[in-house]
Amino acid sequence: MSRVLIIVENLPVPFDRRVWLECRALARAGYQVSVICPKGADDPAYEMHDEVEIFRYPAYAPGGGGIGFAVEYAWSFAATAWLTIKARRAGRFSAVQACNPPDIFWPIALALRALDGTHFVFDHHDLCPELYLSRFPDGPQFPYRALLALERWTHRCAEHVIATNDSYREIAVRRGGKHPGEVTVVRTGPDLERMRPGPACPGLRRGRRFLVAYIGVMGPQDGVDIAVRAADIVVHELGRTDIAFTLIGSGDCFGELVALRDRLGLAGHVEFTGRAPDEIVSQILSTADIGLCPDPPNPLNRVSTMNKTLEYMAFGLPVVAFDLPETQICVADAGVYAGSGDVRDYAAAIVGLVDDEPTRSLMGKLGRERVETGLAWTHQRRAYLGVYGRLTGCGAAHGGTGR
Image (cartoon, rainbow, N blue to C red; front, top):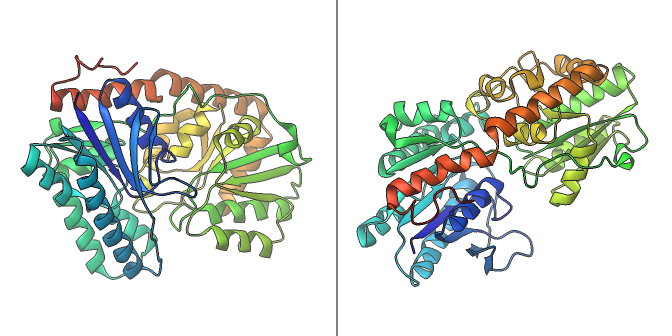
């Protein structure tokens, strides 16, 4: 049986939905899968979960800008290297998959290749150089150049790159030096076994007629502050007290966003749930009328596909977003687009769509159809397993599609 090691630092598993879908696809196709990741709250250091072996280390994120990130990544690298040694005691790995951010795990992959001939797959989730530019637009250039170098080394050490969209694929070829045949697009498609509209829960509207929802990370580049400021315009300038806002998720800016809401006098209109279990998320998205993608134009967002857009579409929700190239490719006619970064345009787009039930209904149906016919994980899984089948030569023996 071929063994696959997956390394992820950004989120715990199975909380990281993309990585967990990949793990389950490989396990169901007959691979023996091990994962190394940080611990979430109350997570055990080791467990077997749904046929996947998970090794976890205590997360350490001191914050404090560039130095804090350097310390966090150094700790993660050391912990991952130790757990790789521990996981390898059960036998050699046929392949190792490193998921970014950060782009630091290629030395571990090279060590496994030297020892065992292990194949290296890079699963490219985020553009770290663009992430830096988006978070620190006035920051020094040295970290940016260092991130470009780490990205280049990761691409060139990898035998195959998995890109989340065609923009990332183009960067892997142009900036990473990969041959086009060495890059496969695997979108973070929703799992339609889990993500589908259910019964609405009217109480989640908190006594209002409409519910507008956000789900996702709340970092400096994610624009959740725009959603809060748009809510201020909707409620206090446009007088629309019939619209409730529910924002699901957490991140570096969570405390600042709650403080902004309170400072704007929106405590009765905007609810922050923090990270919520899947059952609650499903109830909120099944009740909501609109899904918010307030990601502003920046170097990262222009070329990235946001997971939340696909999740909204899976639940049949129309999307309100800014006119970002990859967002428009993904959402197409299932949403409306505000002018680049303009909060007032964004607020007006929310109200305009709330008041147009036929358009909301049509966009919701179009979005769900786009997911069902091409964007869902059932379609992306074939491409993902195809990468491992070609590298390990075990695709046919392991059942191929992972059904």
